[in-house]
Length: 302
Image (spheres, helix red, strand yellow):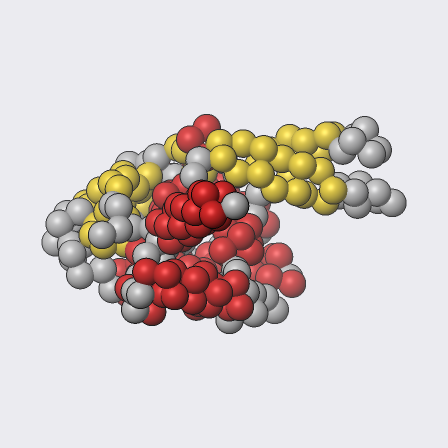
């Protein structure tokens, strides 16, 4: 049996009846997930959805957790689940190496922190939010009315939005952010579902106001940290790329995984399915116990 733990999402999932579900039941990764991760080329939001589908057993009273439901979770909730899944699978401590971003340096900087110490800011989650924007020049030229204020109705970014963005779209930050806004803004004044092209015609200050409002409303995981390079002695603030680190840490070669399966199958006569369904922690505890017993037996023979 895999151990199960319960967590509370920073935002939560709102179902079609308007009920908010926040408690999540998680199980650790098994050899099946490790086999999956051994064959990926680079981490994607779609891969996050697939891994969460395998490990999230329940959200609130919802026991059938589908990929579609997981894509509706806010970005911060998905990050939170990934962080808790890492804690459940490997433990609380994270040790990693970042590259110094200062020019002509690029040396490795070791970081060491506890997942339980990561600041998490929850939010009062609503399906939609509203913001009033004061009338600006050329508003009427964009098809907006003559009112003094225009209401912007929007939702917060979710897994659907993450999966929709390709690496190419991220090459242009302004276009990427504006495209995200076009997905999240339901109505701007009298304009329903404004396009990215339409939003690009707005004054930059107006777009920035909406971005800042969305950021303030959203839950947050503080995954940036201050570090000092031991080589150049300069400090910098670096984002901790959770998704890249998590999947990089989990990506084991199939040869190592199959060797562990062979080792346990050979000595315990368990089936491949039984071993692959174990968590990494449980599998390696058996390997350590078995190795210790074999060593004791060898010592007695000598």
